[in-house]
Length: 391
Image 1: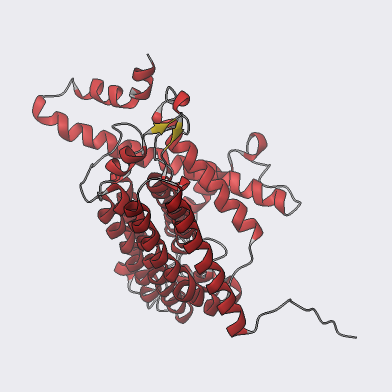
Image 2: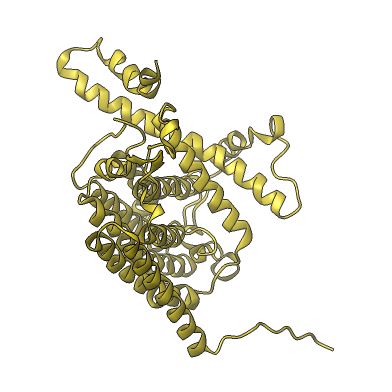
């Protein structure tokens, strides 16, 4: 019974396709998998938007959405209807074809990333040997869509926002990829399914997740920082700097096209959070051996929602950085730390089991972190913040 509950979606799919001719069953199974992805994550998008608005409201001592439906739960429905019925305004001198394609390219690219994420035991659309490489290739396509939106609008604010967004995304895509390489080195594979299988082992009931190692913990922190910047989330939401460049690269978008950008941002958050859980938190594996009876897909989506709560918490807590702070942080701190973490991951592998590698790896990471922090603070002469008021 437990096994059937774990594989309920696989069994349901196989039951549906058995009524079709044998030649069509493989295609039909793929189509059903795609429909499931397209249905599940926009639904999560609606849930998370309400959760985020209510959470931020509580942090700011105000109410969130509470008018539409019980407890405001139907607010996403009202927002969707509003987006569908609003007028689609296109600038007269805009490149209409590229202007139309930009949000579609963004949404398609972020949805393609889900095809290689194992969302449960045997629940992966395309189990590629180079699944991680495919994920990052699709992620890089979002940069093209952002620039398409800014350039096609024929608006200097939009173009400036697009250039800032592309510079930010390229800068933080480097540490995002390099922090992932530590997990690849340890698992010995680019297949996300094999990376999960490598962590799906237990000693004394405790999991072998990579986050419980020095390089895994540092890698997850660096990955999370780069992921927030890659998805333009606060405090890295400079491409949408309302006080500086109106609304960034989608200034000239309205109606459902704007809603597609909004959808693409949140679905991108889901995909990058799912990748982080896969690389460092065991993917769909249980946190304790005694909890392996819980369906694997519950663990995956549970970790995904915890990551969303972390995104919301940070947005309500951290102020937005300046552009120079953003770029300096990437190239002078995050990228060097990812290089050091790769060295630590290699040492962890070759030193062998024992307390020696724990001491050596933690000493290197903490020493480099303190040294770089002290160097940056001294170089920039940063000290306690002082406030001056007019008399």
